Image 1: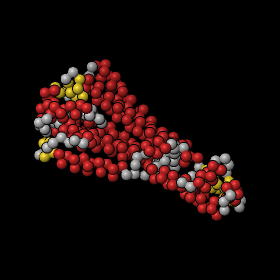
Image 2: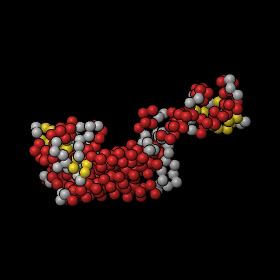
Image 3: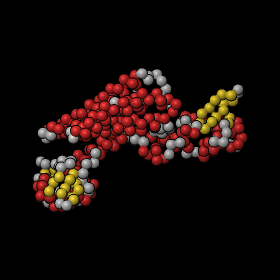
Image 4: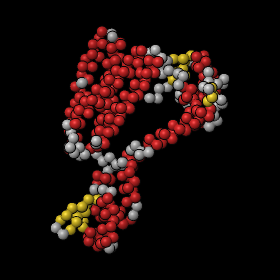
Amino acid sequence: MRELEEKYLKFIDERIAEHNNLSDQYKADNRKDEADLEKIKVNIYEIFKTLFLSDIKQLKGKDLGKNKDIEMYGGFLLRFDTIPNNWKISLDKAIEHGDTTKQVIEEHKLAVAVELKDKFLTLLMKMGGNDMTEDNAIKLFKSLSDKSRLQILKSLIHEDMYVELLAERLDLAASTISFHLKKLEEVGAVTSRKEQYYNIYSINEEVFKSSILDIIKEESSEADLQKQREDNYRRKVIDNFFEYGKLKNIPAQRKKRRIILEEIAKAFQVGKEYTEREVNIIIADFHDDFCTLRREMVCEDIITRDNSIYRLVDNK
């Protein structure tokens, strides 16, 4: 399966799992309307997932790695315009008749479609251009950490050359030039073609079109491992500072303090307004010094305070 397809399906599956979990949480809290809304979102994700899987079956065996082939995904992109049309009509009718429940449902359905389209376009643009992965970047940088190879590339940027001409220009043995060209070709920095008795080498400019920032933004190959380490550290802090649901003491280190504040924040609901007394009561269930903890939660932007009304910050 192509990289774009894997990443897109992974994104959809993560969203499905996330909203299923939210639905279960709302259901457990007897918040039926919110639970039903999350299930509607899940349904929309599953619809587009099914359509996407159906479409890519028709693309098997086709090369989708070049810009000229991006149009092959055009059929799927059109679905983001055709399918939501009925939702837009329903939304207009709901607004016209003052049906706020229906309005909220249609707005959320359209929001999911927009999110899916934006994600697909982002992945598609990466595929159409030069998507420099972390591993490829490391290999390329290692290959370029040699003055002779840089001089070879500086020569090839002006014109295509064969080994003997490069050797003469750079005052190096032909065998040395061949060795360096092989290394550069392995990482895709140069390409070669046969012309009569010579192998002619060209610089592959596409490889060098990624900026350093693009490479840094690329998801790390150790992303899952790093997340696991963070989760393990977080669990260790919680286990050390909490006992039977009570906070034993407030950590002096900010990083650890932030973790325990986020753990306490789970007792609050997103979108709900709290008086200061209500906030104090909730925090007091964890520790007697509710004033310090409340102040720290505001400073860390975990909860907001406006005219003595507190709200949990939604970081999702």
